[in-house]
Amino acid sequence: MIGLLVIASACAMAILPQRWAITAASAVLAVAAAAHLMAPLSVPIGAEFFGFVFSFSHYPPEARFVGAALAAFGSISLLYVRPHRPGRWFAAAALLHSGATLALATVADLLSFFVFWELITLGAIILIYQDQTRFSVLRRYFIYQMAGAVALLIGIAVNYGATGDVSLSNISAGHAFFLLAVAIKTAAIPLHLWLTETYPAVRRETVVVLSAYATKAGVIGAGLLLPGFGLEIFGGVVALVAVLYALKQRGLREFLSFHIISQVGYMTAGVASVVPLAVSGGYYHLVSHVIYKGLLFMVAGSLVDCFGHNDMYRIEGAGRRKPLLMLAAVVGSASIAGLPPFNGFISKSLLKQALAGTPAVWLLIAASVGTALSFTKFLYLCFFVSKAEPESAADQAAAKAPPARTPLVQWLAMGLLSAGCVALGVAPQLVLRQFFHTGAEFYYAGGILSGVWPALLAAALFVAAFARINRLLRAALPQSTGVLRIMRRAAIAAVAQLRILHNGHLLRYISWAVSGLIIVWAVLLLL
Image (cartoon, one colour):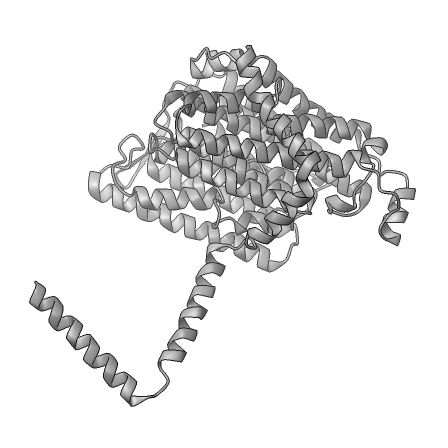
């Protein structure tokens, strides 16, 4: 119901004065966050249409927590973008995109799920279109999302044919199609190009809003469509492969985009697990990731404002020029690396405890080491290293110029997200007992060590062999290609082989025909 009200408020943005739209949209999402925590939401709300019952007011405890966090982040992200003066369409699209995600977490039937799944895509497309990016970027985003929508719709039809029901509590067929839809929405490699080629291409304010919702809708989908499906290995492999690709990136936003995919792997391993504690860890990690990844994208946007480019290897001395920005970057990096006392430590510890003794936990630990290593690289290159001499005239001019001023409201947004990283790491029990009914412990010697040692190992690897590791990754990992490019290359290779085989020699064709007849005759004799 709250998500529906947010979506409805998107329409009101069209009649508001331009200068009030973003502030009003931020206020709407702030109220939605408070409503998720305080409003009485136990009354079911739905409607019947052509014999199907649509239900969109199902608020289990984890949905309240996730919804409150997503709405609160949306409000803060719109504060961050306000100095860039986006217009009414941006505010309306942001409310549609976020409101549909809030509603998705509260539905109880497959048809409502499909409607809000597609509204999330519609909001993102409007955001990307008004951003005035290249049409190829928007086209790729649209193609991938429509492929996911078709897979989801086929899965719903298959399940309805098997059960005669569209309830989310009665899914017994169509799992392969649901898994494909979730894999596309979560940008699992090689179905990831819609994310890694869109997020670096749009404006800084747009990517901050986009970073929180589409992939998290995929995670929510994994929890609702594939509960207990056992995707631990799948999520662990995605987390590890994506972090290896992140390690070899030069661009800030490309780097953070691959880390979205990696961290979503953790969430998928949790929410679709057969272990209840892992499900709690997956949802807690979803909220943690929304907070620290939004913070890191804000830091990246401020770095681009300061230095005029997106290349980590050409940024230097930001720690000296922007000490508060460095502090925000350290908080975000420590959170995503899983260091105590930050929120990533809590969610990753829950997943490790729940999946202990399984192959998936080793994949997630390896991904944690890779994450810590890559953010050691990020902090070192952007904030701590000092080059002897700038590489180009543009870099020399940037080094001499005073740093770009960061507006106060953007500092406020980064401060609020930093505080969220600390609060969810220092006092996790307030959330875990209220929304997940678990009393897991984290701050004991073994628990703290489990969060610290991957970061220590990553620091040692960075000092001892990072250049060698980077060269090895660049040589060993293929270029990041999506499934459509793989299919295109396979088709071209198949046609080339057919051209070689079909060369017009009559004798060869006769020999193929005779050989085929002999094989068919032999098979019939054996049968």
